[in-house]
Image 1 (cartoon, rainbow, N blue to C red):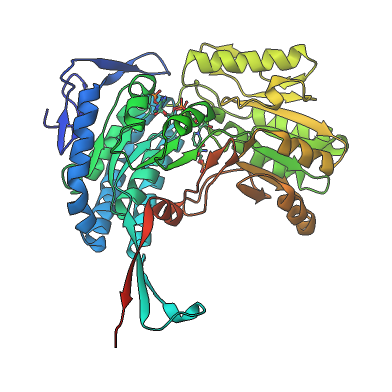
Image 2 (image 1 turned 60 degrees about the vertical axis):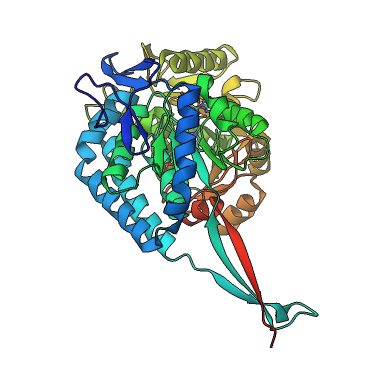
Length: 484
Ligand SMILES: NC(=O)C1=CN([C@@H]2O[C@H](COP(=O)(O)OP(=O)(O)OC[C@H]3O[C@@H](n4cnc5c(N)ncnc54)[C@H](OP(=O)(O)O)[C@@H]3O)[C@@H](O)[C@H]2O)C=CC1
Ligand SMILES: O=C(O)[C@H](O)COP(=O)(O)O
């Protein structure tokens, strides 16, 4: 197989510079969550093939680490250009493979091109430092340490279904600029989109063995790759359940984990309610709520709740729902299981007394945007990550209680605070147990050079261009001792 896929849309894996089918003959058929249509077939690699890929990665390491940084950057700039040229073609695949609406699909590809350029720039500005021994008591100017960052080795990048291009590139780009070789294990649903990203990087001139892929069900080959002795770093984005499992089995291999969330929007009584409502609707329902950073609960007080609910309802009723190829916001969920879970959360809340404002309608795996008011802490939707278009409102007596409920979640990704009083916003922000607090904006990851991290069950370590390069490199000190 010389190219990414053959005429029957059977996709290979990039192995040491060549697109290869698995010798086992095992493939996985990827169908569309939109209409069940055939998207393609991907390889289910065997353990022996995983060993082979890891061996090539190890072999490629010293030559890639030795490539000058400006040359590494040149390849990423070129890949960004290729991605932009192919944006429409790749967006078409994204739309059908993961049911992402057209506008968001195109924007994911273009955002990734920007990400690669910014990463190349950041990599170029990495500099070593020299530290003089004389700064520490008893030290001397004759002792000088030259400290620079060196690669960790082979990075295993594991990406989720919801941003197959961007969340693969956000691992691959910084790992490569840091001098590592990379093996990508994309989510099975989303793998075909991710392989197109890899093809763009290959076409940009990456040497053989520097970036390779392994496709196959995470539940079948995941543990084997993760525990392989020649994997030096694991960069994972996905569910807390899988993340916890990986952190248990990975032994001494360092990990970066970006996991689930239950981001809250705290709306204070002095907030610009119209702005907050429209901003929250966007944050909660874009890509049908299938974003780790989606607004997943509103916490507010009785005094403004009715007014806020009316505005939210108006915004939600305007959302276009349906086929991602049309100009819509809410599209079918990734699979029936996800829709079943959404339905369970809605029914559980209604049965326990939540007030249904809008939604609670389902056609197959298409779940209509749903707003639930008067949600209480005994309901599953108060705590579970729905990963679907459901927005619960929890009413509290004051902001102390709001902060307490926000912090009671097992997750700690982001929280929004809507208020016109910056002093109050700051004081509340200081109390929130999350990686990032957004003041007067929905929770969101971008722009992609900001630090992005979750605390508690939301993750471990920090992403974001410069932070990701740092996470996937380590300092190496060479100490010179002058004798005269
Ligand atoms: N904090 C953050 O930055 C983000 C977090 N997320 C979170 O991701 C979740 C949704 O993504 P989803 O794809 O469903 O997540 P999953 O955890 O189901 O899967 C993520 C990746 O892990 C793989 N995987 C599964 N089991 C193993 C294993 N034993 N060893 C190695 N890899 C494995 C999957 O492969 P396969 O597909 O083959 O099963 C996939 O590539 C949500 O919880 C969301 O909040 C999403 C985006 C951003
Ligand atoms: O997986 C996700 O949810 C993404 O990290 C979200 O990115 P965004 O908040 O910038 O859209």
